[in-house]
Image (cartoon, rainbow, N blue to C red; front, side, top):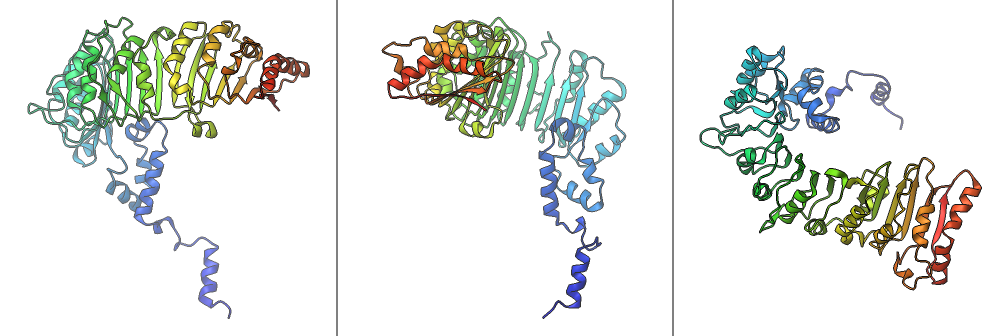
Length: 483
């Protein structure tokens, strides 16, 4: 039985454009999923989606799309920005229902006239303001504080940046009003502030998920414990970024209790190691996955509490990546999935001065428990690393921290070679305890094969004493170049 005339017509219509098959036939819920997926893929999200409002392009396609967009304002994180420059739609903004995003970054100009009127008018809509970003000091800051002496029940994001040297204190009524209403902030960024000026405000921000602090002034003796007291009231905190610009930390005082941050998954720190170690003495974050630490002076100074903090992390690491540049080196820990996918490591330390053997030893001691399960060790070398391994005893002690390493991998660029690594491995050749050094090592990957065949043979020959000793002991090690 052949197809009917109706079926033939439908088949013919399917092969050409037809008004019966348009994007208008997509259900609203599917459109919403598409829009939300597009939103989440935006680079520079805050700047593009929130402040530049590129979601306007979706709302301007047709009535159907506009209806879906505005009916899902919360899901799509919609908001209308108000700043010192006059927008064309200011009256629509203040009379509409969409959330308001106040964006006043006036570092070098006064907020006066119509710019001041817009800021005050926007902040009067306490129940619509979702985000505030303010940068300024002096008279501008005073005007801003006076306009925010009210509760903002929908406020989720706040970013404040002051000028260096300013000592502005956030009053108790800031964003809370005379009745000191509860804050509902989820994202908080405070830049160039002193801890004493913000500690009261931090104590009231108990719903935070993201916290970024750049603390500019020298610390009082109780600063570490004050910050810990603030963090103790943030059980939902997932991301913490802390920068301490002072190079003269106070005499540290060890906290008596440990503050558990069970949901904290990301921690970034820039500053003096003394303050970090004291902070670690009072913190526990077993769910940490993203870690980035950089010390002033690029030196790893003595740490007492940092090892305990790191060892409590549940994450298991498969590889260690040590990268050498002109004057510094960095160290990264990689999970099994990161090694396979070749994505950027989530655990990074450094840069540190590469000619400082003390830093290398202290760093390896602090991370020794994490090193014990690592199965792969990578060295990224370039041609400017002259004598980076000149202190063979130091690097020998560093490698002794890896009893489970099965593979060494050299990543060479700019004419670097592998002779120094060979000299480290051959250093204790003939020593009775030699087999306790990298005891389960199976292979050494020397990177891409040199074009010069004699250079290839020469570098392989440099590893021969180590390879022969392991072969005689029944623990063969394969040394090779990648084609």
